[in-house]
Length: 231
Ligand code: ADP
Ligand code: ADP
Image: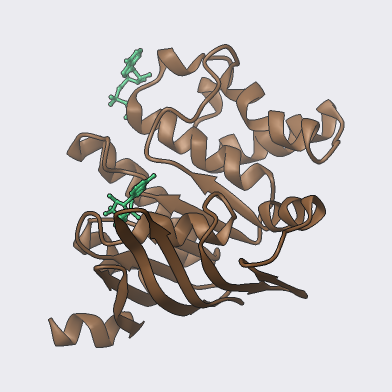
């Protein structure tokens, strides 16, 4: 479980998060919904310390981080290892093949041997039905394929949680459907996921837990059924 408490993110002209507290359970899909500019991405990026809030705390595993105090490099490393992140787009290394994109993290960060990392990457490619694309470069893939590789690359690090920030909003509808299909399968396998999206239909199909943010404040935090029966 991950818990944030009393998170404030103050920009000079704008309070992006205004006293946000929430928990994120393992083996569930939490979907963060809300209007554009409401603070969804800021909340997501707070979890893996891509964002440094003004104040508040983040607790995960045995670690509690107080954002008003200095954070040790080792703690930042440990928190980042907990998460795999999938961005909206352009997250692959253009000069590396699909296979090398997937093994890069395990080899460089986890110090896995190329042979072991390659075996695992091949298993992921097979699971995603993309074995024949292993030797291609990102520019030779469709947007939907690139995004599925980005998801595999995050999974290759065996994170506790997968974080996805608008993973389909740069895609055409039919490519979006392919990525959503993969995410639905991961959700069905009880992968721990936290997803920022505008796609209400996707939220309705995969979310266990919905957090709705408006103007930097929590408007709803509860079960997906509760959210959709109220709207
Ligand atoms: P969302 O993901 O819901 O679209 P964000 O979390 O990206 O919203 O942004 C929340 C608010 O913070 C927005 O009003 C945005 O303009 C503002 N914001 C985000 N980043 C910055 C920044 N670097 N400087 C100033 N304001 C920012
Ligand atoms: P996908 O099914 O993964 O989203 P599309 O349906 O768009 O892909 O494309 C079908 C085929 O065309 C795929 O095999 C893909 O490799 C190829 N393709 C699509 N877009 C591009 C591109 N920009 N450059 C090279 N090949 C592409």
